[in-house]
Length: 207
Image (cartoon, rainbow, N blue to C red; front, side, top):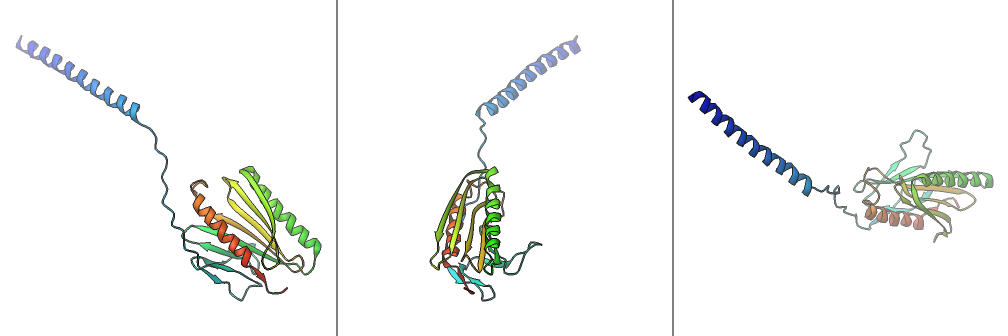
C-alpha cells in the first residue's frame, strides 16, 4: 500500500516534471527558430598601400613605374618567356601578370597577338556581367587597348600595349583569394589605378 502510494506519487511527479521539461524544451527550440536569422559572412577590412612608386630594373626591354609596396617577380609558369614578369602586391594578394613579345616589324605577328588577346578577354564573358573596352594613346606614344570586366570573374582588368612595329605587351590583373569580387571592390578599384599608372609610365627601350 505504501509502496503503491509512493509509486503513484513518483509517477505523478515524474509526469509533471516530464511535461514541464517538454514544455521548456519546446519553448526553447520554438524561440530559437522564431528569432534566428542568418548573418552575412564578414570580411577583414582592407588596408590600401600608399601611392609610392619606383622605377623598374634595366634588365627589361621596357621600363615603367610600380609601387614600392609591390614585388617585381619573374613569371613562374612553365611556359614563361624571357622578360615576362609579375607585379605582386602581398597586402592585397593581387598580381599583375605581364607578358612581352618582340615584333620586329611583323604585321601578321602583331595581328595574331591581338587576336589571341581578344580571345583571352572574351573567355571572361561566361561569368562577366559586362566588358568595357577602351583604346587610348599613352603619354609615351603607345597604343593601349584596355578591357574592364565586371562580375565574378578571375581577371577584372586586362590590357595590351604596342608601338605597332617592335614591341607588344599584355597585362592581366588577378587576385589570389576566394573572396567575392563585390567584397573586393575597394581593392579592385585601387589595383585598376595602379595598372593605369603602369600603362601611363611604360616606355620601350628599343624604339
